[in-house]
Image 1: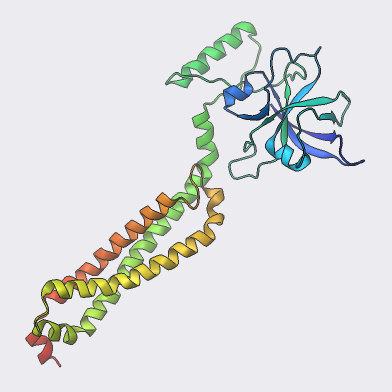
Image 2 (image 1 turned 180 degrees about the horizontal axis):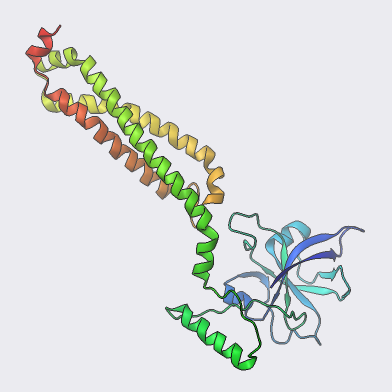
Length: 297
């Protein structure tokens, strides 16, 4: 269960307070949640009410309140009725508690055996393919222990992730639709420019063919001219995308805004579409009759 509490820590400056989220956790919490500990240890069954009070802090907590110190062994006193010093025994990796797009905030963990709570979230880890069966078994065990115990909002990690990223998926779908429309418009625009260029250069193409230029030469000439414009636009677009990639960070999950494979894949698609847009006018240019082209002048 996640709560918010004010902290007063030592050796802070007199009157200085530290604010952080805290979680009441069991001994297997970090292993179950796959949260690594960079320093110190996790909670154990020996961390009871009769043993010295301990706590584990996040890396963000260390960066903010102990930037140039070793936090292990430091003691923190809660700003509340309980003035028992809590000794830092471990440093855990940061997690995005308030959302995938939210900034990582300082937080700490206390042992459930030392500070029990009436309302708790239970996290289970299983290797079974169908987690719903585990949920049913867990519900049955709880009801067998206490038939009056209320169980609410049971869900798998996949369901939680889907709910969390649903707004981002919708936004990315809209961006994908607009990007597809922009790609079609760019292809149509390039096709129109190249068609106009071919009609404008019909006389030149006729002279080239009259002097012995083959169809392949004319085809490559038109495609090359079109690809120069396409590659220039692609370069400008890639540079702009890199500069504005930070704006998309909050919409993405599981991928970096500057992922090289994504940029490479998009570039290949744009090059492919550009080649197709240039081929139709280029093939039309190869059908120019040199006599008709020269006579039209």
